[in-house]
Amino acid sequence: MVVVTVIVVIVVVIVLVVVVIVVASVVAALALAVVVVVIAVAAAVVLLLLLVVVVIILVAARSKTWVCGRSVPGIVGLNPARDMDVCLLSVLFVVR
Image (tube, rainbow, N blue to C red):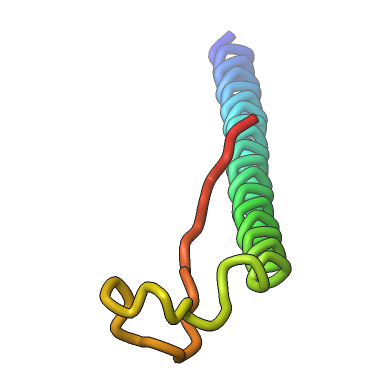
């Protein structure tokens, strides 16, 4: 009878250890999956921000002819640069 009890206790302990290992593996896998998703979302946000910066630079370069040019001689009092090149540098964020 004692031998059977010892065998049952050993089997129960082995089963409990296996269950703990399986649960720990599942939790670790889920945690890893969450970390991978967070990293992927962060990378997507960074790439989107880079795309926005590139678009702003391209739009600013394209519209440079509209905001850059020679000073108007008639407004010398307002523009001490006189006939030097004058550029208006600004970034406009428009939400439509």
